[in-house]
Image 1 (tube, one colour):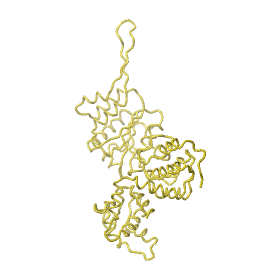
Image 2 (tube, helix red, strand yellow):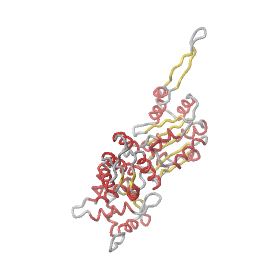
Image 3 (cartoon, rainbow, N blue to C red):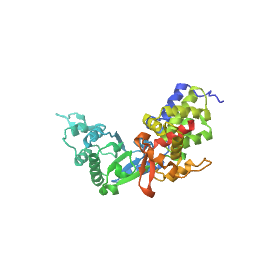
Image 4 (cartoon, rainbow, N blue to C red):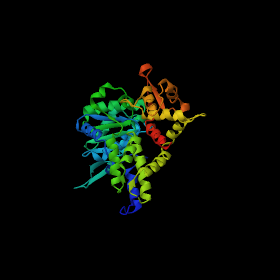
Length: 396
């Protein structure tokens, strides 16, 4: 057993771990952000191309907001403003918050012989509040009143906005692309495709860079693990590292979750080697801190008055099933996993009933059925459920 003698104060190490691994909040410090180089480069390219804007989309839990936060620090020679959209927002309220974040200095000449120059700050957000309705052309006019910088406006959680808001932004994108090439808009949100996030607007396709945020690669997950632990002098068993990566299924949330609770336990016990025993502790504490909706849906899925063994096996097979580029799987993919360690293999129709039941509310509505006939596919409604199932099965 390895003890830590040179880690310094425990509370200082816990503070570092709390910043390096953030399962509850997005990363907002560049020193603790790893991976996503390709997506960040595409954003930079959009800024450098006159008149181009960008849309960053993907599943829940893949780190879109963390990347949006890091854009404001990593990208140089820009004036960045990041706004988080909510379901109550309209086009006007969003832009009020944008302009409230940009103080505009106004100079006026005084009166008399060699009068001193007077400076005042104009709040354009207050100016918008006077409008009964804000149109895209109004926003363009107000941006022209701002000091001349390369502006980067980031609209996070854009999936929360209503269709009318999306339509207004689509018109604004076209107008800014034609008239104000030094302004870049970036939209970030949960979506399977661009149309879900911004709507179908053929007129803006040429000026809107589409950037899909995939789940993290194993290499990116390993970077998070190794870099975070290095900051506090923790080393990790290579097998344990691989298990964390496997459990996480490409979702940074679970990498952060397991690493945080494992490292916290190590530091509090003055240890420096993350082995299987500490992984088990991290998994148990991680499960306790997973979103209640996920835990509740899981419980509904496996509960049976007779035996929950089959439900557990089917759900575990779904979590490990081979998926396509859209993270969908077929019943045959599930049966292949189900049979992996079975002495007597079963046919696909043996578990078809269970898989279809997992699409219903009484079974937690864990899966969504897509297509019909031979094209039928299934996917986890909440993609984070896949990793949670793997963690739970590890404790069974």
